[in-house]
Image 1 (cartoon, rainbow, N blue to C red):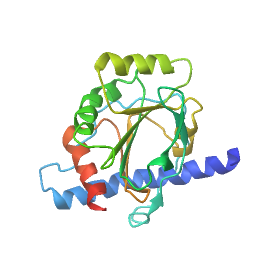
Image 2 (image 1 turned 120 degrees about the vertical axis):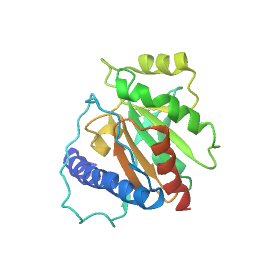
Image 3 (image 1 turned 90 degrees about the horizontal axis):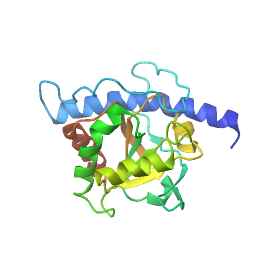
Image 4 (image 1 turned 180 degrees about the vertical axis):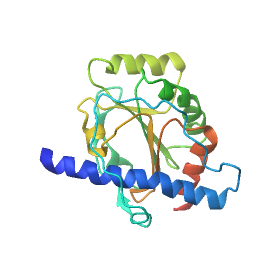
Length: 207
């Protein structure tokens, strides 16, 4: 895939990603009546090492679109290559983070707690550390995970393939992907446990 093609893909993906946040709000508003059913992501999202390109979608034009989550390659803690497509057939919670990012750190305990309630046959958590080799390295990311005793699956985006493919503008960012590999919803900003669970409910319900 050429750099131009990947740039165009990043534009398209993130446009629908932003629309997905609207879809999530609408879906959850209907299913979970409350004063603020979706809740507001924690303030202070951080700029990641790699910045994608995005365009805002026209209102009302993408709400019913189904976008297949683009594949990417990252490495696990042992340096083995892992692809998103390796988990096709199982719903995926895909999160982009870095250890220096305050909002990312604030949501990690909730992600870890909820991830322990599911086997990877039921639901996969892919926590993608955006590594730039300077501000964030595999070593700093691994140290943060170990210090906090987190047990979810962590991938390291050492080539910045994932961040570039998805046009990530700020972190944390989370995508909810159904078992068929389609993006159901997405949210920029730190998630409260309640909202994380609601997003998971959407992709489990689509099975």
